[in-house]
Length: 470
Image 1 (cartoon, one colour):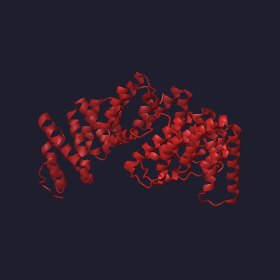
Image 2 (cartoon, rainbow, N blue to C red; image 1 turned 90 degrees about the horizontal axis):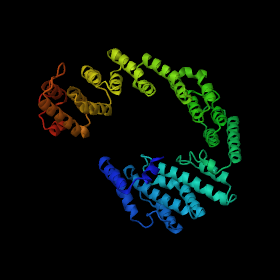
Image 3 (cartoon, rainbow, N blue to C red; image 1 turned 30 degrees about the vertical axis):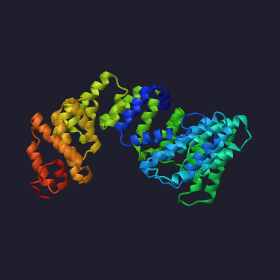
Image 4 (cartoon, rainbow, N blue to C red; image 1 turned 60 degrees about the horizontal axis):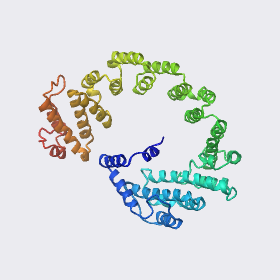
């Protein structure tokens, strides 16, 4: 059951509580909720059947207004579009032809929507994808009642061809509800003829948009028909010897169709010598799809033992029994100090819930972890705070503080100041044994010597910046 269906079955009070929680927890969500609440007060947003003229006015307003929406406002335009699609879907229950005409107008004017917005967040792209899916559903209803109302192949092909904003990338692959198999086969022949004709007339090595258009169209028809051989031809026409990434694409589709024979065939090609890591990953995926878990575990364990990494460990772990998990954990503990990537080691120790060892490892290896990604250190901090590992928590706060100051990102100095003052509090309240680490006073002195000129940070922290040498 999808999330939308699950939400439809939630009691009203639970749904209200969820929305209230999201509005407080995530930045920007309150604006989106306010937009929908404002729309709910407009005529026709109640979910009741809307008449054609009201929807036509909404569509005109949506596609003809000159108001521009910046990326942080794009959700407003998206909400208006969702409102319109909901109304059209309701109209389609009683009058599919009118609903289809409105959807045609929306799809034909999609470029105007994109011209009105900075769609960096993809809101309008998602909206148009939903519009295409609704168009296919409504068109299939119209065709059931009036099979000859349109040349349905040409309509679908027309949208696919006029696709400057990539709105119609899936209109062919999702069209099996509308087009008959014979029509899809005819469309495949047309794309293949176009591709072969382009190859005969253009023998240069430069990018050929016509060839790409025809091959992509052929691959989309193959998906609509769930035809692996046709999908393979869509690649081989322009690339008789596919590279590893093209092979990966073919193999993923073969696995989707459970055509394991074709996946095995493509995994045996000589081109894999340039990307053996990807080949290994795909072989393991094939074993998992086939249900050959014992061989998969053997492969993953061997791969991990050769090069211990969290990705391989977690893949093995998900299939291993408790004794196998215990054995690989013991091997990790035995080898931890010998491995060359301290961040990978720490992540693996945390993954296997070896919290004491992980804390000790962080403390002893902190100088090798100064380049760790900011969000990664934050995730470590959460774990060590919950586990009560005070010294490891101090190391995490120091890493975060040094990261902000090292980058000189003044807008983040308020976070750095919070980390600094948290360190002071931990020192006073916990009176920790710093062992081989710098004491609180020594750490502050080092910080002042290295970052004393970052006056705005020290002001934010409420602490003197004395001792500056830089």
